[in-house]
Image 1 (cartoon, protein in one colour):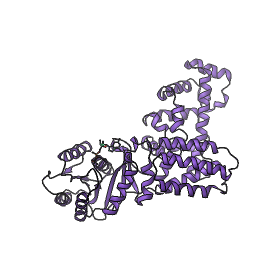
Image 2 (cartoon, protein in one colour):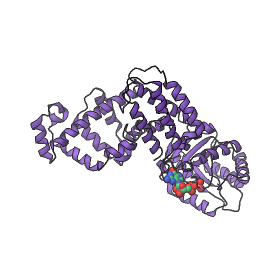
Image 3 (cartoon, protein in one colour):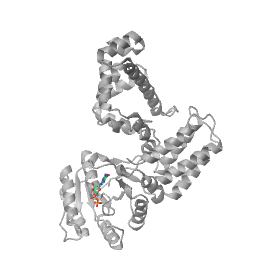
Image 4 (tube, protein in one colour):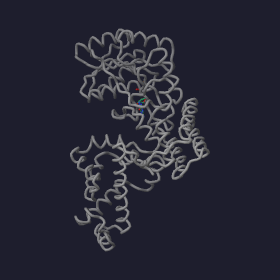
Length: 445
Ligand code: GDP
């Protein structure tokens, strides 16, 4: 996963600031030196690192301490703000043409992930109720047309192609006529890539662009190529004009520097990130969520999205109400756990929880199989009486012993569960506060 190392390093730095009542200028400067090294090691553009450190230091030294935050937390908040702003502040969505079909022209170097991303994007647009058409304009590699056809078939999206003998300009022109006849409201044109940018490639892309007048030119770049991806983006933008960036293979890039630099260098937003091979792995890019992940604050919003997709809304509302009024019981804990099981591998979910990514997660999960843990917890709760489940404070020694015997666990196991339950309640409360925009304490302190 991208940013693994950066995330772990930043958390190390912040651990040293944590809990300090007062931060001196030297404290901030020492921390920023470490942050600088961490960013450079993550392959963030040098100039961006310099500006970033300067801004954060200026804001952090002599800062007024906000209510509810200690100075260490305040520095983290500033770093968080600046990371978000570095990545473009707000989510940049796809735009649609008033006069359909909306045409997206997919461009990029060979192997960046154009064809697969075109397929994933078309598949997602279809899911949103649109009727996309994929167009094969890479006439130089016969295998490219075949590849697009396979991708189209996987997602049930029609592919328009005219073989390798017709020019890409002609193909795209005909594709638009075909789209109009067949009532396709979105057309994704998969253009040819090259190993390097050259004049011939750019001229061809300029010709296609002039012919189809795309709503957006979407540049696909490979995160694993690091700063090269940023350079490529700059060249494409200056020569062709780019509206948005799709950054692929972030799942395979432990550094993430390209994702942090490209917006600032090119002034073009990342619209999607590729996090794997499946359709859903092409994710809309949210700068704030990414910053949270990097800083180990978890990606609570993405987690909530996942929860909302998988959990009954009515039930979730009830649960929230209970949490807010502190009526959340072990019974609810049990039913929530059963719901969580439906959401996929626990390790992925836990990475989104504040304080649980990077090093923390590895440490927390050492020798632990989450699925087995859940079975344990379920058994313990099921050994409790109804009264005990709704009011755990009555759990004294003899009761705990009875429960432990009942499910074949130890009293220590019961105590651990109760502690987890209390911590979860606390975390839920903090998340609630954060959502309500209160200046609550950051969740990992
Ligand atoms: P194109 O030449 O630009 O059309 O690139 P392709 O779409 O053929 O992709 C090149 C390779 O990258 C393929 O093996 C894809 O499966 C892979 N790929 C594309 N996007 C991602 C991604 O987000 N994550 C991973 N792990 N692989 C990807």
